[in-house]
Length: 254
Length: 254
Image (cartoon, rainbow over all chains, first blue to last red; front, top):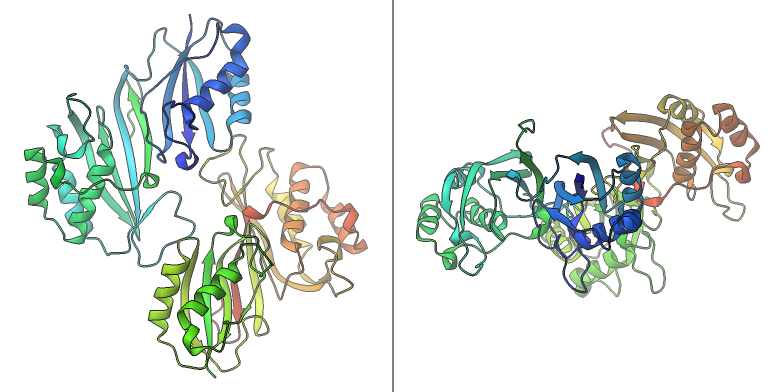
């Protein structure tokens, strides 16, 4: 049975996250309904998909990866166009290709990369409010970036993850940095995987450091002690995007 | 009585245009309510404002100008902050300054400049849909720009304006050009004033030329004959922004 890889972008504003939930509008449900409508006759029932990163309500994606099996070989151009006309403009299919048999967007992913953006000026910008968190308090970028360096390597991120019934919260972070172009601050972080609300919790912590409410040493201690109660909550979802997912054999993304 | 000049940006998506209308959410109403709330005690009743460009439903602004009179001298920093906290993030105050007595944002305006943006790629981009018109048909920019050159100078734009009970539709266009950066096509047009739906009608006409459905000569003929029925309708509002308004003594905007 051929397996397909689907690359997606979506504006998460109107969705209760990626993963299906009863009676709520989710990306997965819209996608599976569209796939079932297009491929229905060749499938036995509903199309089932597997996703690389289950983004939360309001979180966006510009490089989400989904896999699914189909009994027949597909005309990928045609299916891709049909999907876009059913799903656009909130969800957009960037690519649809036949993958190696048995490919899983989730299990085969080596790393995920997320980007968080903050608009740091006293007055909000009406045109940035869908994709950035507006923080009017002037932030110290150097301190935020120093805090971000503490996240590197394999560590237990219990202080920065929603409690998930005793599952391991050890993750391996390959890259983490804050950069700025004028008033737009960008946090990029790449890891083998992320636990629930991890990026937004790390961002909220960095912002506290940027405001001067916490020091870089405080962050080191909170991380070390795995003390969720000392952390700084979670940054709002609309500043966050799943940027890409890497697989073996992919070109390396700079 | 001192007169004030207020520079505004707003995302027009959630508004039924700038100008007040009964029972509809408009920028003017939100603004006057906020001003009245802040200045109420010093004003006799409601604050009345005058605007440079009455944008239509769904049209945005990054450089709208409004004027109003106030019996007292204001602490402009404080009023500006209060306005932003009441109006943000959809409406944002860029500047508030005391103007020359009797200044009118509408009557004293010398030119208005609008920008229209088209995202010209087969697949929509979920993050551009608030500010660009998605046209999937490949457009010929050189032809569109050739058509735009016909709009220059003083002309009767009856073919490209909504009928407005016999008022003159003669306008003086100083600049009009199409440019592109990758898939993003931008139309900028500056004129002494614009009649109703003029920019969107000109854009719709240019797009017909860009698609090859009409020639540049067709446009010249339609303009000449003032034939609204031969025009191409109006482009959607969300691609349009009022960019700036010039006044005597302003620095010239390139």
